[in-house]
Image (cartoon, rainbow, N blue to C red; front, side):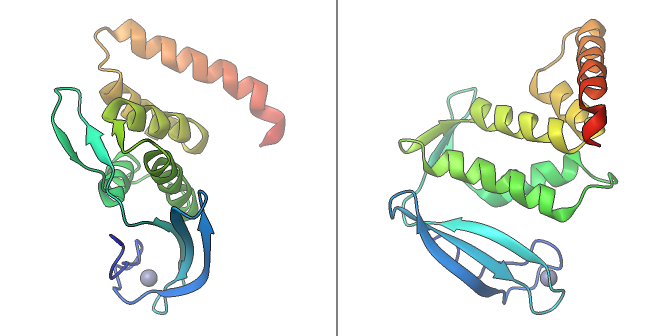
Length: 160
Ligand SMILES: [Zn+2]
């Protein structure tokens, strides 16, 4: 299991407690609900024995590491008022996609999932990530994204 010594993502305590544990993905993985004895934070992990390979745009391959995804999301959302649970959920979504893949996943696919998730979580974070992920060439691309967010905003207004 890659999850030995699971750290609390909030206070980085090593010794987190498992409060719930159940098999998922037809027994290929274990979903664990964990709780941190130090700060009380709760988070979910997916753990399994096999390694998933991430294929990068330039063809390089490396082992999937959810903590790198988390770090990327946290950097993107630095100084944004986003609940930790939202970050946890997004990382869990990426993990699920990685581990339900057939042993490998493209970095672009991970990027697309993160982008989609950020769109729901935080507009500024979404735009920050989009500008990198989509490798915007022209300012008009950026404006188009902002315009599409505005359109969505007015549609979602009643839900907020
Ligand atoms: Zn903690």
